[in-house]
Image (cartoon, rainbow, N blue to C red; front, side):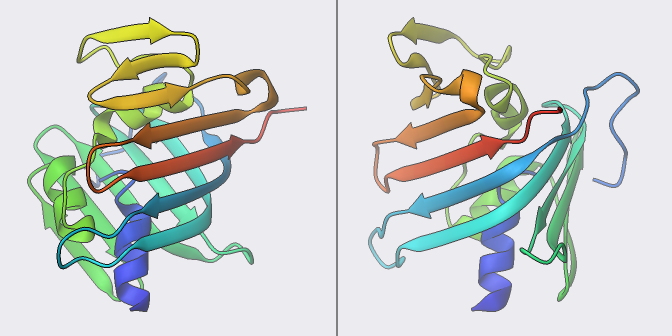
Length: 170
């Protein structure tokens, strides 16, 4: 179960190649993820501190315990995604394969760095609305973005809710 939660935790991104210079500063904060039950898959939930840098092409995501221990780390670059947990390391062809293996379904992890910065991902069309914008079948809620909150929801089964509270530099 613990290995499954660590894998679930990291599905919020996927290779050993570091982000290019200028690919963005670290984003950090806390997140909660809930994936509703579907067919033979039980509901899953995760709460973790996180650190994220990079973009849709290259990056790194770390999920940490409340004591600062790294629960899982993902690294990604074109055509590669790597997940490192205390149980070991696994490589995947891409972020979609990483999330499918860890969650049983593919999530739009390439869009996550842009979404947490309050922007639509450049790789797909988006539509603005009064809550923020919709993209890839997800509602990106930015109503409290000035306070550091981003809420990502997908209604299609299984429903998914990801809330992130970003730390702001002083």
